Amino acid sequence: MADADALISRPAKPREELEGHSRTRTVAVVFAGFCAFLTLFAPQPLLPMLAAAFGRSVKAMSLVVTISTIAVAIAAPLAGIVADRLERKRVIVWAAFLLAVPTLLAASSTSLGQLLFWRFWQGVFTPGIFAVTIAYINREWERGGGAAMSAYVGGTVLGGFSGRMVAALAAAWLSWRWAFVVLGILNVMAAVAIWAWLPRGRRRAGTQHHVSIARSMARHLRNPRLLATYAVGFCVLFTLLATFTYINFYLAAPPFGLSTAALGVLFVVYLPGGFVTPLAGRLIDRLGHRFALTAAFSGGIAGILLTLAPSLPLVILGLGLCCASVFIAHASASSYIGMVAHEPRAAAVGLYVMFYYAGGSLGSFLPGQFWNRGGWPACVLLVAAVQALTIALAALFWRPAPQVLPASAVR
Image 1 (cartoon, rainbow, N blue to C red):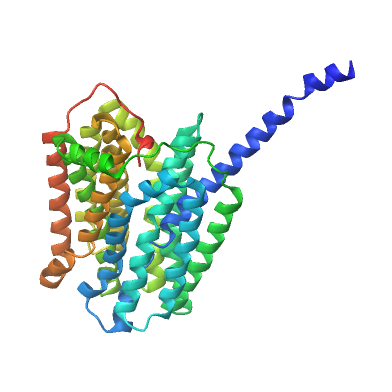
Image 2 (spheres, rainbow, N blue to C red):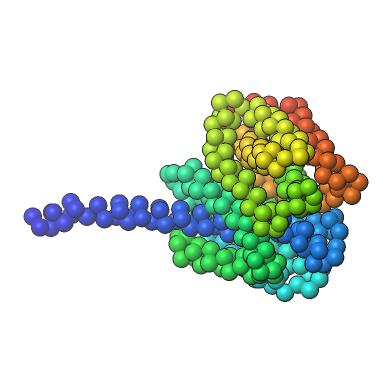
């Protein structure tokens, strides 16, 4: 009887252990999202301070953001190939620890060229975290994958906001060098959490030959709807970085005259993105991708025009609309890939990520030409024009397809 009782009571313990295991790995995924986006855009509120420190122009300082996004666009397709040949946790953990190295060394920069060198390497290591974490979630979660992806997205939003705010506050209280030191320490702490709590992958994806991957990508690029979607992704991050890079110079100058710390706190408008993404998924499923993107960027155009108002509350409201519009548009474009891409979809997603960050690279650099000619109003006109172009691309090339994937399935 005792043996029978033991056998009956035995299943309860494994169930509790599985629930604890699931919670632990979800926390690890949140830290992965946090770590991936902690440093990528953190220097944005520091740009006016860095321009003064190095004695360089607004256009030159935009390279601090541009160089990292260029590196991400180059490295993103390669990260998936590496992850297919190595255990995914190993790639994520190594990338997280390696990312801390150029972050800390950026504090030692004595010239803009040195700073750009370390920022480039930050971009190189970043896709090893975010791209491989997405693959890890899709591979390892048999149930609750949507919740895990939402947790990851929440981590990216928190990391993006925290990086900007922490960098701004550290620079305001200490110096811009200490901003990179503090970010590097936080990076190491997040990497340790990922190493401790993220379980090893249970399964490894089958490997593909490099030639077959190249052929798959070439086939995707011949698909007009996919090509239009890549162009949409290009425009989406273009508008985000164009807005949130040059708004710092605008608000640091009269009549606003915001300090570096105030510029960092301003990025609180980034946080609503964590709440907007799940709502965007339901909007897409009900009304379609074209409607969601059109509604989003219509609001984005209104938001960017609001930033021309000589009122800080209205500028903040406009920035909030701009940020929300980008999250919805990104969710629309990334989930549309799942509808129209043929196998292997991973290659299609990799191309999207490459175009997405290529757009961010141009978006953080090209508006400098407009700034030199017409200041912030010229940048506003450029952003509004790109958003209108994005709406036109979706209207012309996006067509309904029989199968709809959740917006969180591809990010």
